[in-house]
Image (cartoon, rainbow, N blue to C red; front, side, top):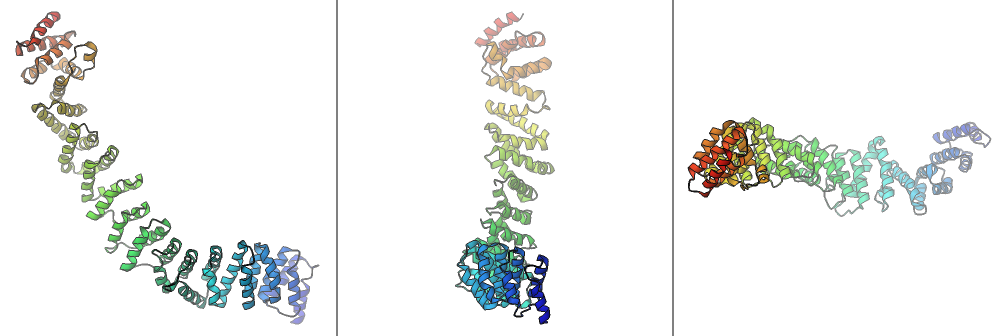
Length: 537
């Protein structure tokens, strides 16, 4: 065998091709050929001009556990890069002396290179199952911890059962004590590794880290780990999950929400999801909406009503969709429609309620109509979305009830409110002569009755009378005659306006003036009417 080794060593000579030298170094390392001639040859290659040869020699030195190579490996570490990473790993393979050297080098090199040492020490601790060497996981430097955690995380899928057990025990010792106070970055790293082990023995350690005052990084890592095996959490675990899901830090809330989303819904989870309907983050509310938004319960509906004013417009629509799907929810929407101070919100609710109102219009009509009338008579624009709902569901009933209300107000001689109602009625093209005449007469009652031509041209009631008298002059006159609250000056104003007209309207003017003289013979307007009649003839 010695003859064979010498031949391989001769292949490392500088005059050999690069490929041959690389192959020779690989063979020496993989076969752990430790003949006396091997070490000097490999050490010489550590200083070779060819970077690839140097890198292969560093790896071979680690495999051969050449402790005399440590000073040169330390020099390679200072330069960083791939050779530094290989040098740290090679030193870690040299047992206690190599590991101690790595620890001593840690404080002597630039921070950016320390991660190579951290990775190598972490891997060595697992392979050699040296508990003290895993202390690197709780180092004060976050970058060192990050590198060590990443190195072990890569090893976990390939660990033996013995190595997994060793790591699990070490993590439990690091984070399991009641007096243990790890730095946030260290605690997060421990939680991450604990989760990757997928070992339920670690569960108590993880559950103990999901709530404050533990740092968000650790809480998030613990929750992500727990998500691998939680299927039926107990009462305390459910409370912790919902508390995390409602956390203002989304880094913590997100993994908790993912766990809750996967759990099958049962009665034990319902109170927790209802509480999430009040969460600050819309993601938590949206999950709760999906889980319990369909339930026709007071607590659910009250929470959804609160969410109707959420800043997220898409979420508001989703909330109203859920409210519209339950009996109690629909009643709550109607209540909000009647109470809201915002016209935009009222329109939004009304449009959403329309398909539901069409299914059972009679149930809602009286309540909506009462609110609409109050708003109309107060001059409140919030009447419009209410009228929209009523008009789209029961237009005939709306027309009749508005007409009745207008007539009632006229009988009470509350002409201002009656005019507001008549104006709403006038939007309906299906209204007949009686309603149009009522609008015209109430308008005449409230008119300024200014005789100047430009003022009369802008008076709506005169336009209404013109349209009515063109086809129904006799009916208009009959109504004017029997209406007790029409005064002499109002009849004079009406007759005066149409006196200059032609045809039917001119005859109508004359008839109105004669009616004035007949009803109010002693009124001074009667004398003016007689004078005006002379001009008409």
